[in-house]
Length: 234
Image (cartoon, rainbow, N blue to C red):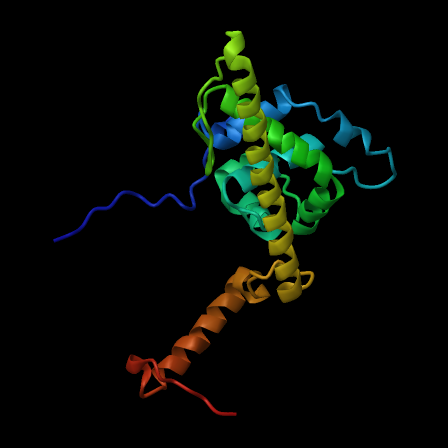
């Protein structure tokens, strides 16, 4: 009996969305963060730190800020993992609009603007919480509005606000410390490489087929292949 399957259209050309933002749902975390960065944050300190120079222009600080914030709010702290997500995940690909920075650029941006980014990230968490969100990515938020209309509640509300701001600052400090630790550890392991690079022959069809044929022949010549015990000396 013949079997019928849905067609696998991996080689079929497709029409792309009109906007890169169409790759992700309208209510997705990444789109919310992009909107906040573009519409509600003052990035003049970051932008003002750049000077016109010859050569390749730097990445837009707004894009880099949105990229880091999305990564950290999603629990991704490693610059290498963020760079990889820019190639593999639609939400990160949307943020960079197909022009992804490498992991060195990501880590250097964080280190260069560490203090300014810390303040911006706390501001984002405060805005999200004040707007009524119960979480931003994996970060739990209060989601309740502080009532301070009556004078007897003002002192209590102020103390609560200061305590909550300190908690949000601690969360952002944890992000940045985790990012630095992850990058330092991976730099030690991988040096100037990302660490997950495939061999060059993988991308070349003829070389790939030859390698696989060699591997299959080697497995076929091994008497213990069914037990996973094939060893070759020399």
